Length: 113
Length: 174
Image (cartoon, rainbow over all chains, first blue to last red; front, top):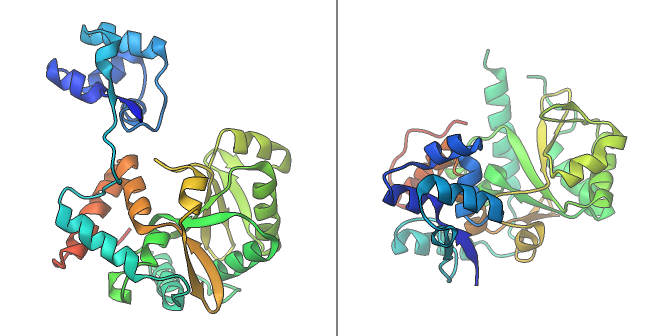
């Protein structure tokens, strides 16, 4: 079970924005977004400060992250297409042309004034 | 831009890493491009992102190989000395390796949403001129961009969405 914060939702429900909360905490908005995404751990002290700003309890800022495979796009159809593309590339496939393309891009953009 | 002194500097880096057992995974736009079905589906990128296992030994090993290939290094705050590497690894700072030809390889020690082990465990092993190249799973690479949430990542994901839907898209430059 993964636990993450839900600062954005809690702020939105109270008519506030994450940017505003971040500003008052003296943090970057991306720090709070990282906590919501489960990429950064929020300390109890930070949670208490956010709760004080939003007028809620620290417990209301925590939720269980949804289980299941990670998805990238909003629709099932797109995620299915993505999975198919991934599955189509089997180990050992030769991708030499990718390097040729990468180097061609390099030459093209670096040649620009 | 001068022609690179090494015909394919990216491949040279991968070969050197494979030879000495540097633990890496190709990520970012470069990694995503390996999943393109044809050249027209590749996205322009000026760098080649490698996620290195964030241990001092592994990073030292990688830098030794890059130095041999005449790359020079730095972080966002400037050049890096050997004695500063421990701090770079501890802080998971990104190292940028460049050649005088203008070829750039980014060495990342942390990425959004995944640890090195999570990306490495199911990385695809593709080949470039018979050299194995470890590339992160497409879903994970895109999801990492989604989690990073930078404007350029969001813009890229919109383009990728259009690519999957096979809709024409105008924007493909970096």
